[in-house]
Image 1 (cartoon, rainbow, N blue to C red):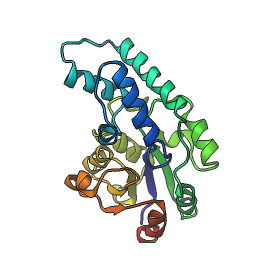
Image 2 (image 1 turned 90 degrees about the vertical axis):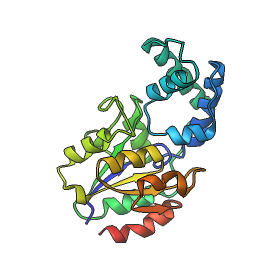
Image 3 (image 1 turned 45 degrees about the vertical axis):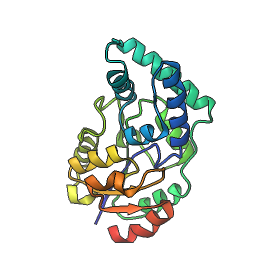
Length: 222
């Protein structure tokens, strides 16, 4: 029986990826960097610092970008994301969260590469009564994010559960890679434009099309 449920945030809890992708595309172009919607989905799960530094490393290897420049870049991208409309809760995910909460002895965690200081407020506003600060793993706890396994390993260690009692819910290949490297059961809910072949190398335990399918799948985890 699964007792620990580790949710990625963007593209799982929040339908935020379209605006994230567009914001990255616009701000990268301002800095002379090419970045597509597909690039965004394939790199989802990385910290923003890694996304920016990777873009410079690949496209402008002769340019030295300071941490201050990276932080300014990230703020610019965040402002564009808000300007484009920000995020709204993923359709159907609150029903999933409430169903899990009603199961005996369960823990619900959020494991994200985000460094938003208002993250808990955002989660409490969208999903009242579900999340607690002590069950959040963010970029503040794990500055080296996905695809490294550390974020999910940290959630597992803090949960006090056995690995076989834990389940990761992801929507991104790098998040799946991180969860599999942590040796955790992983469900992909494919809420974006990618296809199964983008996830296949890491062999998700389940591959579902939307939150309704995840809700229907939950009895298999009891």
